[in-house]
Length: 375
Image (cartoon, rainbow, N blue to C red; front, side):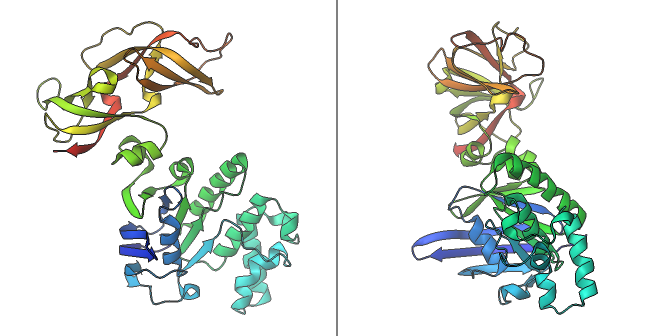
């Protein structure tokens, strides 16, 4: 495996009275595509700049393969950075922009030419090597920046919101290409983004950050399906989130790990599968993703005690092609979000419409207790 392991231990950084990073510790594995995800101002770019050598922390350690690199200049580290604004030389051709790091090393013309051709092929720019940056699209400019960053064969590639200046469709396409490049090169990628869909699409693991802290580290599946905090649940995708009280727990018998929650916002109790040691009386947060909720015109048949069913009226249907979003006002007044995938051709449009009375239901296995608010 190429690349290197990166260890970040107890890193803190302040700018005046603003605490950009607060005792951050992260371990990134060799060859991993690792994303730092969070809203603007959460500290993710500051952490990337510390890894790159553009900032120094107030406290903590950053190590590549166990070696503390904080005393090493940025241009002497085993990392290169791809920036949001490309940072290309406007007067140089694509070829010369990519070749620039090799010319600084005074490599032979033959070696430079071989490696530039190799990396222009990697980023699919073979037919554009003599163009200037002002003759390229945004996506092509970013490919040049990626090739230039990779041609020195670093152990770590740092990507600071590299796709945020592109339109949505181009961003999606280039993201797939970036993931393919990672698979071919095999070095460690650290990707900074505020876009949760980008992070979920390509990452091996994600660190979700807010207010200078790392809230959760996990695979995309773990982050989405098992959020550690209310913030993570709300930031990653859309969800229905409620405060609840544990009223009963059954950790044995036919209903193993079944917990009953009283949720005032829903006007009643629900069942949820929970493998943690929750106890009656605890205050918790409960979430159920909108796509896990089934919406029907007829009340679903009662199947055991694991189906949670609530009646309501469609207050706002939003058709978006592959799916419809329904905002359902439940009988007790709470608004519930439901997503319904369109798996079949809809000759007459969606069967559920505005002001329809509907039933919203989900299995106990599809909800999730996020965190205990108090003991």
